[in-house]
Image 1: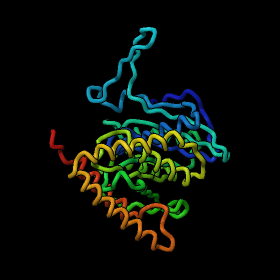
Image 2 (image 1 turned 90 degrees about the vertical axis):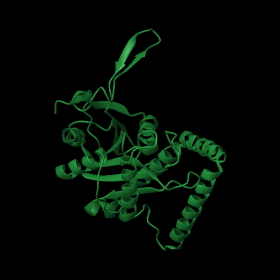
Image 3 (image 1 turned 90 degrees about the horizontal axis):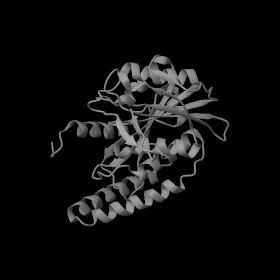
Image 4 (image 1 turned 135 degrees about the horizontal axis):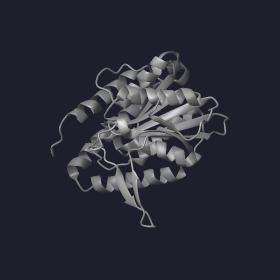
Length: 294
């Protein structure tokens, strides 16, 4: 495909392609923060990128001009890049970080599938973040879904969501059409926190991804950021009694759910398909509603 610009042609061993997209599917920038950390942690090497020219309205997503230390001006276009690394397990992983496109979603998604096929990826895993009624002081709920036999193999639930979707949903449809297995992980982000990125949600996504792919990651620095993030948010929440009261209500509900899960003989690793459908449906509905400032 002409939109793909290859700088190398790696062949992944038992490869997995992890994708994260800025925009609609990235509440609290949980997904893209996770993917950036993963690249840095694994010292991943870029091997391909998508030419942005046909996918964006540059009056909406403008290129950025910067000036370097030598006073040289640089122009940076919206980036959709792929990088790969080897894992100690003997498997290889590729990580894509992109921006939800404005045009030609089918071609964009098929281009991602083409990279997966050409590099030998056997599984595509997308990451996402969605706004939810969850308190920042409790563990971040992570939900996941996959289709068919893969759902059973990975301990995930088949997705039963119906409604508007973002580029993540279109990528999964393209994978299904191409016969490439795919799965999705989503972190629930407190809707009352405007601050991004949310390192606590990113840490939760990475932890689930590590379990899913049977890999180990040193998340010490991200864990420290998550602790500081929670402390700072708690400090701000304490300034407003109304918000404090609301957060205490959310904490009570979360604790009740945790007790219910503890009573289960074999609690699932991830929430059910019905849970993720309901949560994402609320998230999408909220994104459709105009804000008070608009």
